[in-house]
Image (cartoon, rainbow, N blue to C red; front, side, top):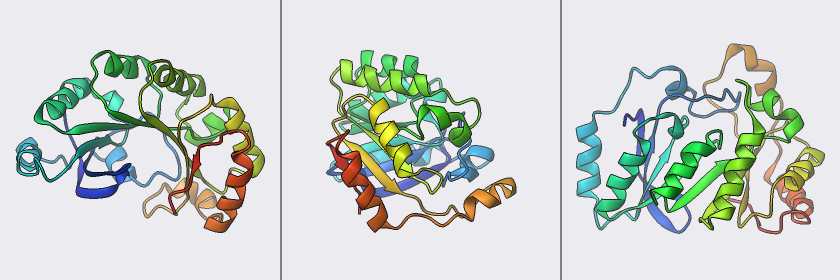
Length: 230
């Protein structure tokens, strides 16, 4: 397992837990608003595995959980063995994913490798490929979410409320999704690094938190368990 970034202590990434966050390089989506573009496009900077192993050993008893995010972690063949090793040390595990690989999520479930999942739902089906690009398939994402429900796993679904999504889009997404235990509407913040070709998209002003909170009141009619992280 290789990692291109690390957050040594976080209170934000696993609900109610203190976490170490590890970032895998590479992604099969190409969202213009990605905040981790450097590790998607440039995987030359890899953190030495010994540094990660030493940190995990040192923080035992001080940190509750290890979060694997990206990029897209399910692209890495040794994801599940690494998750199981972390669990065997006594950590809880959380997996952040774009949901594009339901087969890998099924294997995670079968191996009991993950304690908590966070799955991104980017856009309504009709706009999914436009927003996530790289031939993104929303049906795979929905299949991933249904698997987690079927197996009664702890999870949340997250949507970043980019300015290219309007309230009608959010309502459509809420209708497309099955009933969720936790639906997080994250505010959009302009990424520091982005493709020059995406400048026009980047220049669209973001919604205010107050506007997103107003959107949430309507979305709750279709997904009651909406959560706003602000």
